[in-house]
Image (cartoon, rainbow, N blue to C red):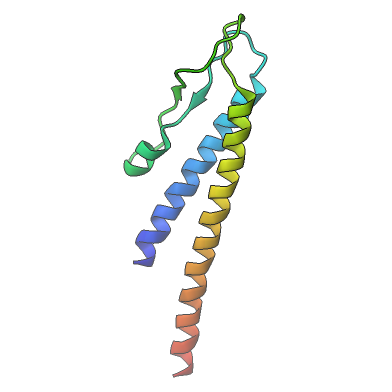
Amino acid sequence: MLDALAGQLERYMDLLSARQKLVASNIANADTPGYQTQDIDFQSEFRNATRGSPQVQEVAGLATKNDGNNVSLDRESRLLAENALRFSLASQLMRSQLQQVRSAIKEGQGA
């Protein structure tokens, strides 16, 4: 059970890391003419955890400026904060699972 949970948490954190890189790239290109915001379909990628790297796609429905750029700094800032919170929660869950394993090992050694 721990292996399955650890594997899912690892995939989840990998996806968060990939999204963090995309968001950083979007922010870095906020003033690049013609640049189109990129993201991953987080839910879909997590469900299809057997795939390698997540599929990057352009984000539809964002307002495009006169230079063709559609990066919304408000959206990207929100995603950064959301990603940081998700990563923190996943890390805490992983630590909790590892502490349970350590506790079980210590109890087994004392018997």
